[in-house]
Image 1 (spheres, rainbow, N blue to C red):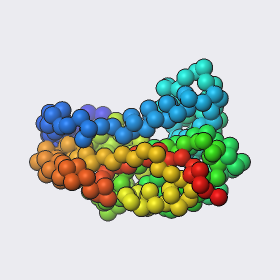
Image 2 (cartoon, one colour):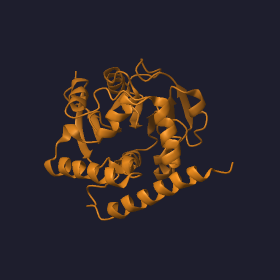
Image 3 (tube, helix red, strand yellow):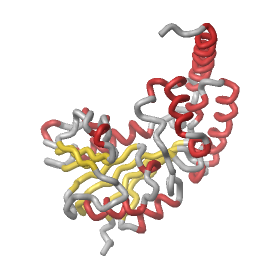
Image 4 (cartoon, rainbow, N blue to C red):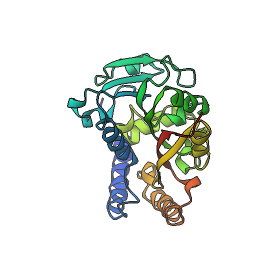
Length: 262
């Protein structure tokens, strides 16, 4: 479909603003702009590749499992993708097996049957998180790992996401960031998705936190309007300099079953 002159002007405005924002982005400190999604992939693969025949459950596996290509074929990992949406999970070509279930309900798995349970950008979509964490504790082996990455409740973009109608959010993402259209824009609650609450929930349900990282750079969502991006970036850099974890925009957590549990 041919775009109208107005639509072409809007698209050009967005491209120019994104280009200016990305020019600034390239000058940001490396540890400020570090990808916790990539850290999640690397951590999952490292732990999986240290085990023979590991059973990995990717909760919220949906249509793709990014860390799958990092797995060592010689370790013969069994990748189980789980999701509440049968349509999404049916598109996952990396998984050896699939499960369709609600992650806030009891898992249809035996006790201590998984070596790794992983989630990426899933926790925020759960109306309650504690039942999920409790079930993860039950299903993991004593030497297993629970690896999660999630956006945070008090980040400006997360607040906007809760305030704006979901239909508007999905359309805006598809228009401004079409590369994110398939993976973003779902209804999110952000229940307990902030520090120190999430760490408290992990510890309450039998986990020790082995590794925790906080990201503060969330201004990527405002790249399309350069002045707003700069204002947002100033906020992010201040939070980063002060290390105010509660107001971070993303959490990466690696947890292990507590050796003192039970």
